Amino acid sequence: MSKYSTNIGSLIKELRKKKEMTLKDLSSASNLSVGFLSQLERGMTSIAIDSLEIIAHSLDVELEFFFDFNKKRVEGNQIVRSYNRDAIAITDKIIQHNLSSDTKSYNLYPRLIDIMPFTDNGSYNLQLYSHEGEEFIFVLEGVLTLNIEDEEFTLYPGDSTTFNSTKPHNWKNETNCITKIICVHNPNPFKEI
Image (cartoon, rainbow, N blue to C red; front, side):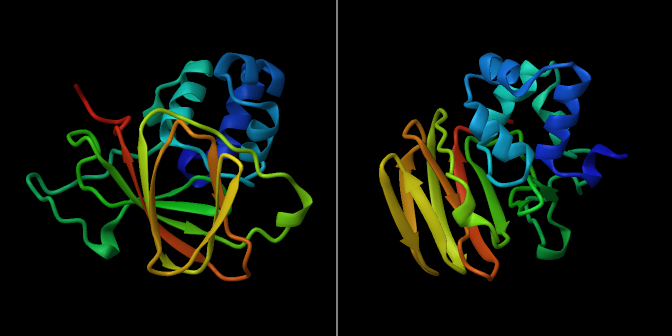
């Protein structure tokens, strides 16, 4: 199976099992909770890029292992056409589209994220996580439930927020329709120094 035909959570689980690591082992190595890692592997939550980088190092792979940056781009082309965006399945509920033609040169990492309805939202406790940097979120369509520390916010189309990513946070779609958001991270974990 190609690593790009599956989602990142499933790929993490596959790598973890190949290394004969338990969720508890990966939790100790990554400093992420067992509950969060379990939700990630089952496609029930998203993950910040720098947290994914910590998991990658814990599993002895590079961050780029989870992404297909080998697609050919026209040299010098800074325009990303809507029909030519990279699409990456973070989980079976979250699809990420890169909004930059060059993911390695800039401080910002902009993405369009499609969040499918989480049909079993009430049956689990959303695990919050934190990471280095700052985050900007803009809701294009649908309704986003955003948790930051002890507060829960409901964002509608046109709503936006900026927050320090070191605060524990996570988001989900509790509706029966797709939610689309623009998410921009700083720093960009792919930037070449």
